[in-house]
Image 1 (cartoon, rainbow, N blue to C red):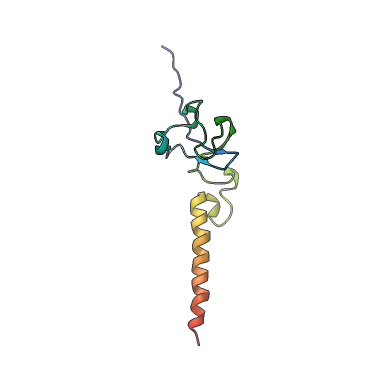
Image 2 (tube, rainbow, N blue to C red):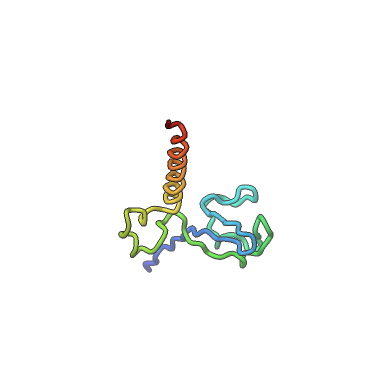
Length: 111
């Protein structure tokens, strides 16, 4: 018996260099019968970009989305924002802008 390591595929996102379409493997593409969880490498060679029709070779690997953005060595610095994901940082930034806007807008009510 041979001990063969089981190969686990990472579900990396890929972006079309022609139009910017991002293939999300966790979502798949139900319009063209691509099941969720299908890795980019498992797509057929005849698969093309659903937006512009570019071939599979025109896509570049963006990596995984769930991971923390930035370098791992820098995640312990800062005020805690270096350990946040991209979505959490966006929510913090735009949430802060909305709160600031509402605060400035409420100053019109002062006399």
